[in-house]
Structure formats: structure tokens, C-alpha cells
Length: 228
Image (cartoon, rainbow, N blue to C red; front, top):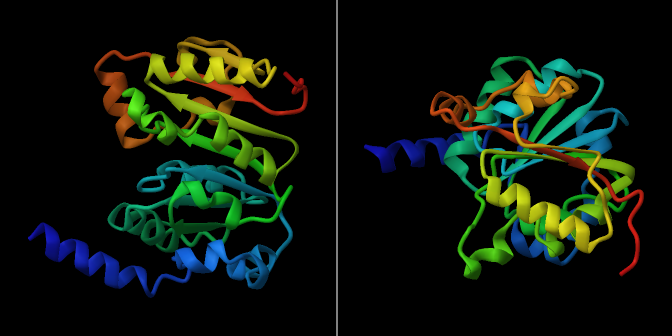
């Protein structure tokens, strides 16, 4: 039954106007980057915010509802998960939301340089095993990709229940000579918490909070990067 449902969702994905599924070769050859225009897609020149590893798109959708003057793009490789986000945003009548099904490692082949205003990383897999370090979404290689597509002063937000990933990311930032704008180990008890960091909870975040886990939050950009 599960496989049949997945196949049904994959078929529906092909007809969602707000879901883009580029071929890997079109990304790597720069064909997508050269032929596709996000301004044309959204029919405006509003700033674009990304959620990487968006899952079912809860955060992307709620951010889009809160900020209708911004465009939001959720990226994930799981077709059955991203189906939910694409379908919900259509049902909600949201015109400022899009989803892309692809690997996050290809994010800099989806967007032009200095074209993204902000990035959200919401509860990514911490990839705690050393052999999986290259898959951590805040490793140095990923941060270089984010820096490439972000506008000057564009922020990156990391929300996670993983103290390991929070601490690891602080170490990576130190390697770049960066100090976080906000670093908090319990964002829901932080008096100056940004609204967007506490007003939205994903399915898994609600589950973690019920278990008593503290939710950590990091906000940073590359404005004050120093060479090391």
C-alpha cells in the first residue's frame, strides 16, 4: 500500500505548477541556470528565501503566509514529502511558494550569485557519524555554496534539537572567522527570540518539544568574515 501511495504522489508531482524537478545533468551543465528565471516564475522581483531540507514544507508555507511580500522556495530530495508541501500550498492559494526536488548539494546550480536573501535550515539530520560529516548541511563546503548565492548580509538560520550540530556549526563558523548574530541553546526561553524562530513549529519539532528537548537556534551571515 505504501509503495502505491508513493507512486500516486510522484505522478501528482508532475502536475504541480509550483514543484520543479530539474534533471541533475541540466543543473550541472548550467542549462537550468541559464534558461530558468525565478522572477518570471513568481512574476515579480521580490526577495527569495530558501528552506533547505524542507521535508513536508511546513516551515516554508508558514513563513510564506507571514510574509506575503517575499518569495519562498523549499528544497528536498524526498518526492513523497515534498508532495505534501506543494499540495498544501496550492490548496492554501499561496502564490509566493515554490518547491524544488533535488539534492541540496546542487543549490548553487539553482540560483544565480547574490540572489537569495535568507536561508533556513530546520532540523536537518545532524549526521553524527564522522564518515557522514560531508553530509552535514553546515559543513564548510555547504557554507561556501550558501555564501555564493546569498546577497550581501543575507542571513542563515539553523534550528535544531541537536546540541551536537549546534556546537559543530559554531566550530565551523569560528574556522571562517565568523561570530553568530544569535546563538541560543533554548530558543523558546530566549526573550529576544526572532518571531520567525518561535512562531512556527514543524511536526518533528512539536514531537521533540513534547519529549522535553531544548530547541537550539543559530543566526549568522558572512558580513564580518575574516581570512584565516
